[in-house]
Amino acid sequence: MINKFFFFLMILLVTNCGYQPIFSKKDKSILSFNNISFEGNKSIGRQMVPLLGLNNNKSEESLFSLKLISTESVDTVAKDSTGSASVYKTTINVILSLNKAGEKIKEKNFTEYFTYSNMDNKFDLSQYQRDIKKNLINKISNEILVFLSTE
Image (cartoon, rainbow, N blue to C red; front, side, top):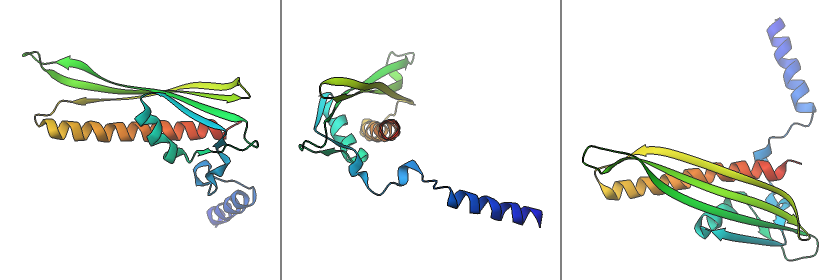
């Protein structure tokens, strides 16, 4: 009986306090910028824009500009006895710079990596690397969304 009362009280308090999850915002137009620029690996930046819901708004309302500098590297971590690669590491690095009227407001470096073994079939390996790249971009996009929606 006490557990039911406590559970009911907790639900009542949580629903009335105005709690909202960060990722459930229906209106993503909050993130609109006067200028969005990409440097480095532009395909990473282009994949991030729809995930983040960024708008390139040329009006005077938005004085903010966003700059994404992205790099991707696939490194050999280990080799077998014949000298061929046995373990790879894919790293994606994105430097986000938020400016207002030419003055830098925020800057942060987002880095994600994934280590995986080599495959005999090179087509499967390239497909796997493409999936890894997509997953790492999704992780970094979520981190950027949290970074931009705070403060």
